[in-house]
Length: 186
Image (cartoon, rainbow, N blue to C red; front, side):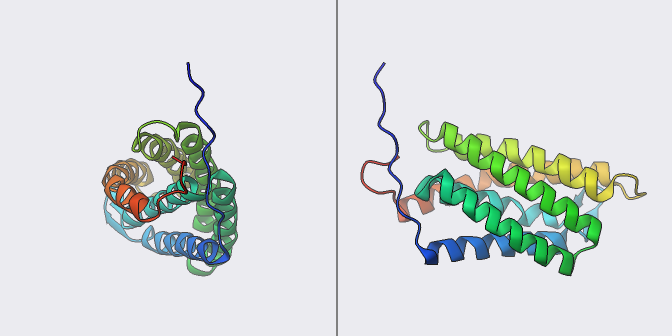
């Protein structure tokens, strides 16, 4: 069985790092506001914005590698802590920050392990695993014990995250061409 060479990653510039952290911060901020507005008994508006965090993470991981992706996740986490306590209830802020960092680190690890397969496998499997863990952590911390229909919101949220995860494969692929890895990388 032939051994594949290790992927070669582009160095992450300060500009790319700042853009990625700002993108993560915007997604978390928007999602923490939107999750407070239910659409119905099955869904809140936050389900539509949060999956973009996985797209950002997967693009950074593919182009710059898992190390820079983790730095973006931790910086995004720090930004999320500050912003979440500013725009959301303390319980939602704690739930969001906890779910965010666990899910992002899981996403980065799963993606990195699967990066050498088909172009779609790593982002799809990583997003599916991470969205499931994120949903379980967030909804159980944010709303467990409340009279709100949080269990049905969690199920609706997960269904939308997974559907959007599939839809985000197209922009992931398109952006891969735009930010093509350095020669020889995959």
